[in-house]
Amino acid sequence: MATAWTGLAAHVTAPPAVPSVFGGGANVVAVLVLLLEFGMFRQTLLRDQIRLYAAQSAAVSVLAVIVATAKNVPELYVLAALSAALKVVIVPLVMRRVLRGAGEEIAESGTLGVASLGRGGGAGASTLLLAIAVGAFGFFTVGTLGIAGVTLPETALGLAMAVVLVAFVLMIVRRDVVSQAIGFFSLENGISLAALVIAAHMPLILEVAFLFDLLVAVVVFGVLIRVHHGRGQSLSTAELTRLRG
Amino acid sequence: MASGTLPIPAIQALQVVTVAAAAPGVSGVIAKVEARLQGRRGPRILQPYYDLAKLCRKEALAPEGASWFFLAAPLVAVTCYLTVPLLIPVLTSYPLPLGYMGDILGGGFILALASFVVAVAALETGSPYAQMGSSRAKTFGAIAEPVVLFVVFTVALVTGTDLPYALAATVRSSAGQIVRPAHLLATAALFMVILYETGRIPVETHTGTNEFGMIEEARPFEHSGPYFALLKWGSAMKQLILFTILLNVFVAPWGLAATARPGDVVLAIAALVGKAIALGVVIAVIDNSFAKLRLFKITEFAAGAFLLAVLGVFTLYLGGG
Image (cartoon, rainbow over the protein chains, first blue to last red):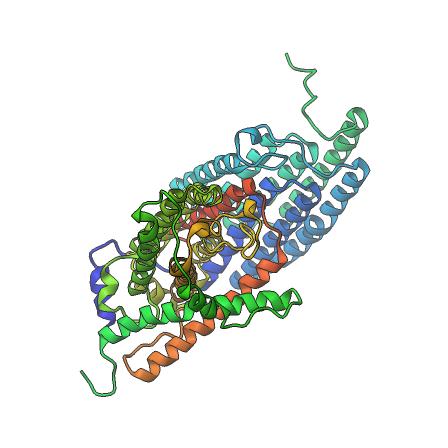
């Protein structure tokens, strides 16, 4: 009986090869990272946005562990533990403290949110479509480069690029400091993901140096948010127009 | 024909009969579970059957000025719902002869036709609530339809064809097929569409009496008697058909009959009903754990499903999905 439809299938294009269980599973985690980026993109409550960032960082760490186990790269365990400690625990803690000091809960209305059906602070359907288009651009651009990763399938690299670009859109569309900071941090998550694909064997000291970069960024952003809030009594960047030429 | 096997046309007919007969029961179980989760006793599981029987004994009325289409619509809709089970794997893992009449897209078109006919009948009535319901259903449907299209594209890219039987066989073939992101994303997108299409909680209150939140439920407001019974039965069948597509094609294409032996077919019927009830319980839990979305947020829900489906197609393009 099974021959009936295989005969029919012969008329159409042959299906692409099935990825291995490891490749599929790794790609699922990479897709999760991108989906959490989109979740941050439309989340209005700043507290939940930070929570989503923590989840995304956890997903990246899990992916590092998967690669470490499957491809036998023991340094990645250390990296995963360090990045989990920093990005899942410390950064969200710091951001939450900053937020508590500011006493604001809901993100400022986005620059493009008006045109969409979903009003309010979050991104509506139209900005979501914009983000999908930008993410797709990144995805297919990487596809044309033809970079084959050593440890992870190429799709994960495309997804990493999409995460970076969607984080860019998030930073551009949002008009409050906390969302922009979170966008910046999640951009770093995208870069970590790309590093896992292309350069999983990178020396550990370099990777740790990148994590310290992130720590510096957190401190700088924390100070910026506090100063900004101290001056304008709000987290919005809408009033930052004085230096316009 | 070997002795001890059912004739193939009989199995084909049995697919339709199974869906038609089990659909109200599945709805009854979901209603019961939902009630138990809320701490109520809830209606009997067989209540939908009694409701249908009662409605069939009642008088049928049509609003003044409604044309013949108003009364024909429930019949057309039910005919559509009875046609779709011929196209999808309800009981067997091997394709039945009429399964080639249409692919997943064809099944989707027939379901859309049924929904369209009901919407037009609702417009016929001139009743504000029925019209509002059908207008909303069509507005949000315009966003939900592309999701279905992209799910079909994913299936087509994965299998090289878009016959539901082929995808079910592909999913059964290896674990690599199940964990690939394209499959998971398409499944999740389809699940969200099913929540939308069956009028479940993030989108619509299923059992409420508040007309302002209604979409699907408002459309048969003006129908009565046997015609109303047909519409209710039809929406129960639509629910079971969508469940069957999700379960037997995407999530769990196991437990289907591989032969034409009566024992296998009976087992397949039991497996289908069991799986549908399990899915129904999941949906009842979702129903009780989320709040209904504001009407204008439904587009975001649909846009979320669209994102999943589009990502599914994307991941396939670089060969890794």
